[in-house]
Image (cartoon, rainbow, N blue to C red; front, side, top):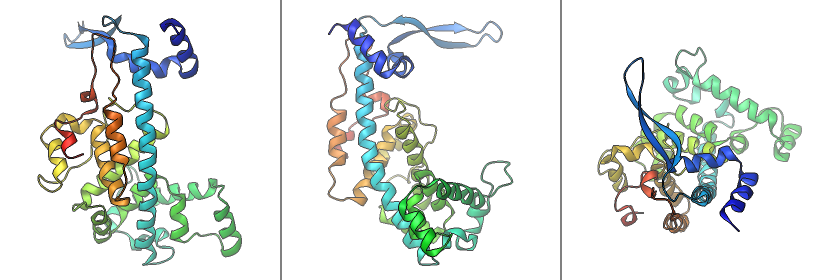
Length: 301
């Protein structure tokens, strides 16, 4: 298959705009000056670096696709485990604790959902939860409604929660409960763990929508424990740039999935995949640094 024929084939199956994100790094950039402010900035030109092939972009896309598929596996395990954690934590208080504000931290549950919003976090979560129940097509939900009534007990309700709803529910728990759950995953700081769940919710959305991942700038920067609290985190503390890249989210996923499944080989499969980062024809050579991979990561991974 010639490069031109391959290009036409991939464009028909994947689409121009999805692939354009993967050939963007191979474009040449130029410095321009704003005529009004005089400020300098860079912009992409329509020229590519020498020897760039269309398949360079395609191979990056395929690499990224495989990475997302690996994350689907791990995030599913973490999500299911967190549902169980929440059902036990709240179920010990009341079968319907998730519906009663008194079982949550008053400051966390009562604060504004968004800056300037009159709606509290608890009320916003209730709206989201009720929407999830209303649109559910699960047989177990219909059966419970027909047999027992309108409200689902927490051990049933958690099965309808997506990662975002899980993260929000965890963030309203009392500090004692948040700490206990965080400890099960080997995280000593409940605030750090809560930020990890929020970031993994963001990651889950990227994966679910098939969005580019490998060199994305992360808008949800996770907190990190104090130096020495979790050894592998120190590499990211020392390099601020890596905290805005997706590899940190992969490392967090690795730690949590190993807590859920101690004998898992997921992290080995990820390492093997990263070792196969595609070689490019282009004079503009890309590597794992675009993901925020710190030096000597293989030593602790």
